[in-house]
Amino acid sequence: MKKFFSLRTIEWKNRKVRLIDQTKLPDKLIYVTFSKTTQVANAIKNMVVRGAPAIGVAAAMGLALTACNSKSKSKSELIKELENAAKTLENTRPTAVNLFWATSRILDVVRLSEDEVNSAINRVIEEAKKMANEDIESNMKIGENGAKLLNDGDVVLTHCK
Image (cartoon, rainbow, N blue to C red; front, side):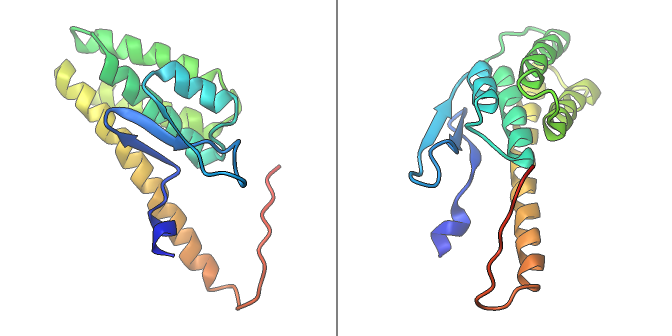
């Protein structure tokens, strides 16, 4: 059971985004790795990544890829590049609240920082990783609280509209 708890739906690994291809579940557990923001956008659009929190984290990671691959010479250039990437990501699911929350949070980190471009790039990557960790912590707390409501043998059925 320990391996289950170490399973990450999405993660930043070696300056790339690695996520579970949810179109293959439940039959297969397949990971896909992306090095470009447009690939993450396509994954969101094509439901490779599903669920509001995971979509938000994927968008944040997509912006981290933009920052990581940026050739911007100034923070203002980086911000423009990130804003364009955010629009690309947001257009994948215009009704996904978590997606917009994540892009806004990443953009705010850069806009409000007084960092130079290289430090701002690192700050974007760190914020995206922080968001992924916060999602895991939140899900663990939901599980802990929900477990108190269940007895052995109970069955839980989830349904999304």
